[in-house]
Length: 188
Image 1: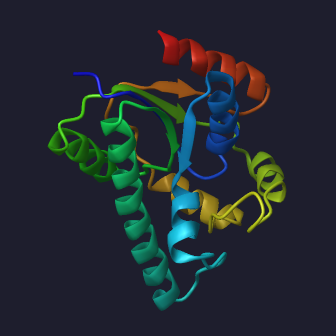
Image 2: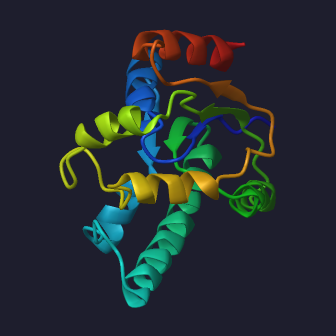
């Protein structure tokens, strides 16, 4: 049984997931669900610069709760046979394991397409440019707001353990080129 279409855009912060998802969702007329939006809606605005052990622990608890709600939302949409595009870091293999177990437990077998947004040009200058384009609380809710935090999150990222398209989201590639390549993969 096919329970809808599920497109997952993953990758570390400032990899271009949201930019691509918004364009793909619009072009294919697919509902888009973002982990940060789920977090903000349910737990409020996160601390943009968690530093202390207590702040970091609160940040981890909120993200765990957000992922639980995120998975529930995905499951509900898939059970209704909907087309859905989702964006989340999915930085560890265990996150994928949990996600796939949830789909299996719910007896869902969506047409799954995974796209790893991986900027090959992630020089400090390029990442600083990307970080400068983000406005916390306006077009960004991530606590990745510095080069140090970027490198920390990227260092713990594990390659998606499922079939996926790796998409270089950095210049000279344009958003349009990336969207075209992603849509070809999605429709294949």
